[in-house]
Amino acid sequence: MAGRTIVVTSGKGGVGKTTTVANLGTALAKKGYSVVMIDADIGLRNLDVVMGLENRIVYNLVDIVEGKCRTEQAMIRDRKLKTLHIIPAAQTREKDAVKPEQMKALCGELAQEHDFVLIDCPAGIERGFKNAVAGAQQALVVTTPEVSAIRDADRVIGLLEANLLKDIHLIINRLNVKMVKKGDMMSTADIVSLLSVPLIGVVPESEEVVVSTNRGVPLVHERGSRAGAAFQKIAARLNGENVPFDDDQDGGFLSRVKRIFGG
Amino acid sequence: MLGRMRDTLPFVIKADREGFLLIVNGEIPLPDLLEALRTKLEESKAFFQNSRMILDLRRRTFDPDEIHAVRALLEQAAGVELAEVRLGSSNGAFFRWAGAVLGVKVSLEGERERAAAAPQEPPPGAEPPLVVRQTCRSGTRIESPAELVILGDVNPGAEIIAAGDIVVFGTLRGVAHAGAEGDRSAKIWALHIEPQQLRIADVVALPPRGRKPKPKRYEVAEVKGDLIQVVSY
Ligand SMILES: Nc1ncnc2c1ncn2[C@@H]1O[C@H](COP(=O)(O)OP(=O)(O)OP(=O)(O)O)[C@@H](O)[C@H]1O
Ligand SMILES: [Mg+2]
Image: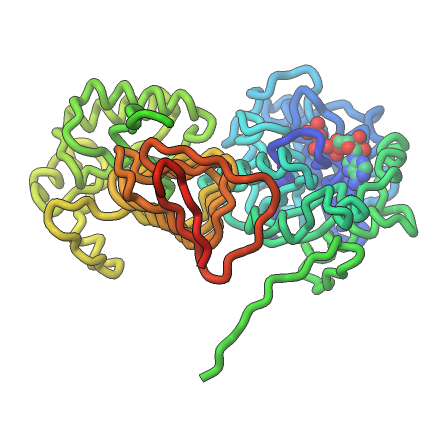
């Protein structure tokens, strides 16, 4: 079996990469897939906190690549889902403690045994980014509807393309439908037309996200949460399911209309 | 108003399906070229890190020692691998030999053109236009010693510069500079002009605030008097 390795990246910090990895990983595991999430944000780990697993860490990503433990020893199993694991980042090490080749080898090894390997990328375009991207076949670029975040997402998409990673999808996070309607925020259609990569989902701005982060329970476990439902839709689309974009929930996105001329 | 562009680089770097393409212009002395290249690589180190570079020598020739020097600089300044050297049709045999000595793949223009569909020969003496077949994203800078054609959008944070006209088959949202060597008759054509800044020769224009309606077909920017005027068609 060969699983898929997917990096979640953004350029600008704090736009929701870790939140996205935690929720997509959880949603895919709930569908029955075997999922490993790697926290590649060395020195600033927090995927374990969002998953409520920080007390269980013994070994981490750097220990694996340095041969201090076997890969399975550093994989922490989720509290609820048997097929969901995380490999935490090292809190006390530098970003260059892992090399791109090592990351590639680890991702390749994990993809043999699991359906999805999700990589939580650090902010920025420096070494940490190169490492996180090295092992991935597919990228999800997260942006908020702010001009600065979109500019950085554009830069990151250019870098990914130059690294020959061409399977790229866009997630718009923290969309505030009211502000878009008032014309105070870029609309989904504007963002997609600027970045010209296919959209895979839109997550609304929601206080539930902060609450769930603090509780260490990803939102997709919560019934009736709009942001949770948005992440579930993204997971379904990743899984190849055909989930239509709905105008209201997805912020008025109209897919590009193709005109076909018959002869 | 700005003066003539003095900082036009002696080379152009563009992204290609196989990596980056380094096109060396004219007859600049090697030390000057190396210095300019080092500055560029160090400025954008993260961008180039570990990438592959194709050295395009169709506009000037190098001897193997010079290729060596460029290769060493690429590697040392930004960890860039010199993957291939592309040449014009003259000197083929010599360069095949040089390629073997250097251990670098050498391909000749004629061969490549037969593989792809052959482009039209430009009139003698004229530089061919540079054609970029992708969206220019934030952080990209593209320069052409002649005309420049972009088949895609030019996003905010990208800069495109040409000695001649600029044609964007998409939306121009970044910075564009046509007639960069002083030609005020140069024009900028795009399906939609909504730029951060426009320059033609020494004339600079900032767009008016607020959104404007999309043109039906295309827009053209040109110098009228001492101002840049954008006309929608
Ligand atoms: N849709 C949302 N609505 C409201 N708050 C959100 C949303 N998404 C993320 N947040 C909040 O934004 C903050 C940053 O999120 P997160 O840690 O996922 O971003 P990140 O991109 O991983 O950041 P970093 O670059 O620092 O790693 C968190 O406090 C999170 O709760
Ligand atoms: Mg994070």
